[in-house]
Figure 1 (cartoon, rainbow, N blue to C red):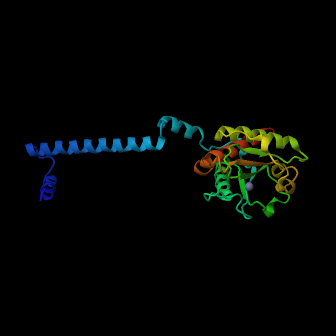
Figure 2 (figure 1 turned 120 degrees about the horizontal axis):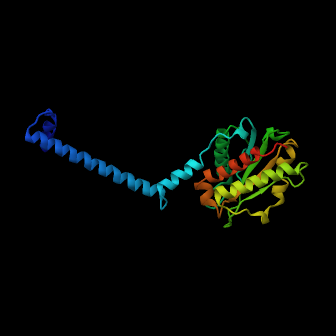
Amino acid sequence: MPRKRSAAKRRKPSSRQSGSGRRTGLHRLERSLFALVLMLLVATVAVTRLTGSRSLAARLEEAWQNRPRPVAAAEGRRVGLIAGHKGYDSGAVCPNGVVEQEVVQRIAELAAERLRRAGAAVELLDEYDARLNGYRADVLVSIHADSCIERSGFKAARWADSPRPAPGDRLLACLVQAYGEATALAFDHHSITEDMTAYHAFRRVAAETPAAIVEVGFLGGDQVLLTQQPERPARGIANGILCFLEGPTE
Ligand SMILES: [Zn+2]
C-alpha cells in the first residue's frame, strides 16, 4: 500500500546523500511549508472572526488599557456590593427568560473581581443581607437592572435624605462618569424613582458609609450589552468606585 512505502521511505537515514534522499528532504520541506501556510490561514480566519471589523492591534490595546490593576487608594479599603435581589427574589423576568438577578449577579461578581485585583477587600451582599444593619465600609453600591422594556440608559442615586450628602454626591459623580465611559450608555436621570432615592439599604447601613444604587441598564433595550458583555458594566462600576476611593477621605 502507498502508505507503507512512504513509511518505509521515512525510516531511511536522513544523512543519506542519494537523489531520492534529497527528494524526500525537499518533499518534507514542502509539506512543512504547506502546513505552516495552512496554520497561518486558519489563524487569520480565526482572528478575523473573533475581532470582526476591528484590527487585532486595536482590540489588544483596549484590553491592555482596561486590564485590572492595583490601585494604591484601593489597598485594604472595604467595599460592599449588593447583588440586587439575591437571596430574596428574581427581580424582573423578561419574556425570553432573561432574569434580572442572574444578570446583576454576574456583573457584581466581575466588578468584585476587578476591585479585589485593585487591592480592595470586597464583600458581595444579598439584597436583605443581615450584615447590612449598621454596615461599615468605605463604600457600598447596590447593583440592579431596569425592566424589560425597549428603552436604554442607566441610573444612579443616593439616599435623598442622607445625613451626609457630600460623599454620596461624589460617589454618584464618579459612578456616572465611569459607567458612561465603560458602557457608552446614557445617564437616564429623568426617570430616577423613589425606589432608588429611598432604597431600603440606605437606612440600614452606618451613617458614615457612602452608598449608592445603580440601575445598570434596561433588560429590554440594553439586553445584549448586559448579558453578552457583562465585563463592561462591571468595569464601569469598579472604576466608579475606584475613582471615589481615590478622592479625598471625608
Ligand atoms: Zn431590581
